[in-house]
Length: 369
Image 1 (cartoon, rainbow, N blue to C red):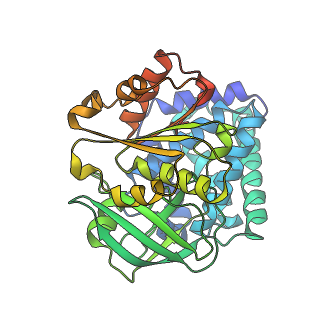
Image 2: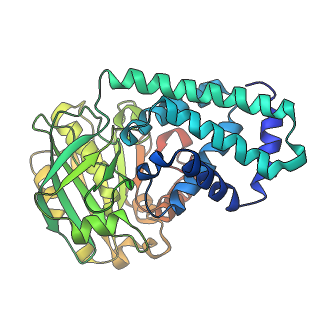
């Protein structure tokens, strides 16, 4: 992008106005294009945060096309589930330029306007092209009927969903989920707990998050027979390809078990064979909500060993790290580690594993970037 430093400087200046920036942007957008309002959730707080984060990512990576282009392509594919079309991109561009002009005031020069216009044209073009390419092979979303809704505790449910058409995904990838009858235009990311199946069955493990919207609705209000929408699978950080065939140590906290259980199924069904140790941490026995399925996986597979970490057995679980009992249990030299759970648990566990000498390239986990 031309004069990317000027874009970064001006974006930093605008950012000093805080939450007023995305508020102004969306107010302007809905004024000039009221037909797009139903594409967004009623509660806009998270959406405003996502806007600022996406713009920040674009500006930060403006000089690094190897990072920026894949990010924009994924954004373009993701926006298909909102039924975004070319004219919507035009309205967003107008709202963006108007917002920048408003908050920059006298600093909004003709040169800066040209720079931002060129940058947005490139961004929109890349996103649109990716969306068009994806439309040739994937629907904007998959409809999934809830064929089973099983409570596994006061705040947790396991959903069995049957898709209306096949979805190709790799174990460890995540999907965006919407409950259109409960919370239209409100999506949240979840990771299937099973490897892809020919019958289109997807299992989702949902814990109701305090203050959340989607997860409490799925746990407490969703019923058998309801229909969910699932977006296209994304991500590769938790897939088996990252481990290059190594033996594995899997560390799960809470519903972070879901993607790791999918990895185990993938190995059981498709290989390649390897040793796998799963450590599943919970504050109490009720937190070991998927014990029956794990036993069923382990019984015919001697290469799989499952170790529950409950309460005192978890050692450092109360401060959100599960590294201690894992590291004390064996010499894991050469193993690849996968860590999944709450952000605090993942951060603390990865920190402790790295401090113990586990090489960075053997640590696989989702992060904020």
